[in-house]
Length: 81
Image (cartoon, rainbow, N blue to C red):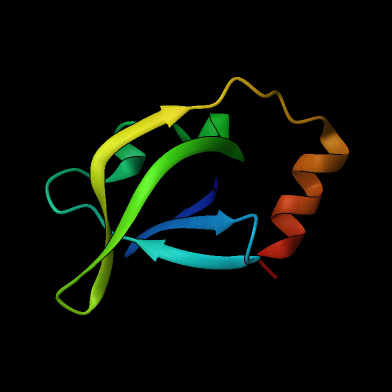
């Protein structure tokens, strides 16, 4: 999964397998308060869960040590459109 952007109402996370973008909300902490926007797009290991009509995460986020080049980063951002 890749964090592709932040919105006021949550974090956009792209599932690379399904090509779906999920809007993920934190129950206690916003992902944006943990990971700065300057690192985006950022590949991560995360478990997302449905909860009370929204999508949230387990509280565990691990950055995956892959550095996107400019063209791959642009492809991820284009997927949002």
